[in-house]
Image 1 (cartoon, rainbow, N blue to C red):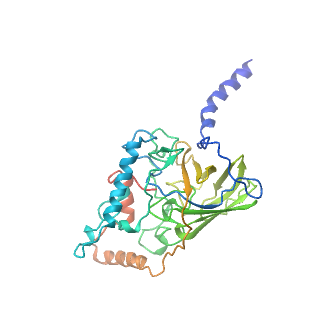
Image 2: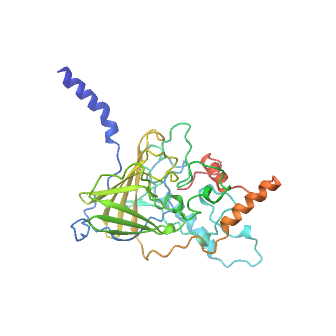
Image 3: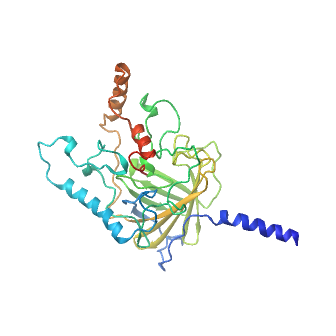
Length: 359
């Protein structure tokens, strides 16, 4: 009897941790079309463009927004678009032109609103508007361990100064990987290029990402990852089917790629399920006990894109990187810092000085 009592006690202690997992797709009764191998057909072009972001804005203490709250958010975005569509005064100064200053980037924003396409609506799951993608924590925020600082997605984890040489600039600037976490995992929407094309076969699944023309390749039918020394961009992904849900598990992330400051121990599990003719439920689960106090995750829905994935051009004719490095050398010669860097902006956002960081 003592043995059974101990076993029962251990089961109760372990149960809460075991119960924590990625959200399950809503029950819709929808029966997805089948691919040649009998599994659900996920192929096509999808988009996750949305005004909702990964972490919940601290102004909301609830996951589900009211329709009035959603309308207010969407209304502000509509007003910004309307302002950008007005004829431009030829005598206007650059600083007077409408710019996208979302995610706490302040007044000197890096894009005019006409160049951005973050989506026009709040993300909805099963028709319910959401204040953020994370569902596992009460405040909808990432559960970082004390003393751990969240890093911008795909930012360099270590190294010399950000403007010391080309190799220390962010991966997106160097055209190595889409910035902001678009490529994933976790796949997250940003200011533009939020389109993905899925191509599947019985033994491989490919996800073409519009941002920086990244391609994620998932090996199907095996749960065996590559040796730990093999660390490609976007990690090593294996996949399998659980009923009508595609499960993708990714480990072995590249040392220069990070998700909110995660370490080499990062593991991300994604679940994709067709829940409608033009809706694809996406759930994610993030594990790294060295950085996060607990595993965390959330959900959102891809919707069918109305157009194809267009070609992405990165550094062709772009003088930005040369300008950044030249400016840094000029500051070193004069000893005068003339402008804040991207790293400064990220640091301010993460410290809460200008709002929460973007995805």
